[in-house]
Image (cartoon, rainbow, N blue to C red):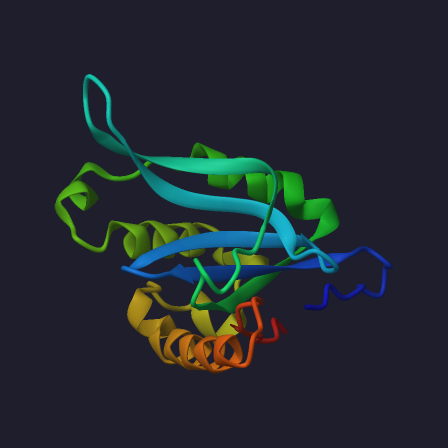
Length: 167
C-alpha cells in the first residue's frame, strides 16, 4: 500500500471501495500506508424504535479489514492531505435517499453516490464523466476478490486492492 507525495511534498491518500461479502461495500480513505488505516464511510442499518438506514462516517482511524471480512477493493481516486477536511465534510453531509431504502443494493448505491459527489479532482479521470455505478467497478472488484481468495489460501490476511492511478 503506498501513499505518494505530490511535488509540494503534500501526502496524497488513496480513496478505495472495499468489498465485504454479501454485497456490502464501504468507501475508505487510507491515510496511513503502514497500517492500512483511515476514514471509512458506509451505509448502516440501525434497529430501534424505527428501523432505518443511515449513512455513517467513521472519522477515527480504522484499518482495512482482514481477508476474513474483506474480499478486496479498488482504488477510485486520491485526495491530497490539504483537501482531506473538505472531502470529509462533503461525505459527512450526505444522507441516503429514501428511494434507496427498498433497493437490495443499498451499500453499492450509497458508495456510488459518494463517488459521484467527489468527482472533480478527487475521483479517477476515467470515472469523472460518468454517473458511476457498481457496474463501472465490477471487473476490478471481481479481480481483487479472486486475488484476495488466492492470497488467503496462501495464508495472507491482507485483502488485495486493484490500484489505479489518478492523473
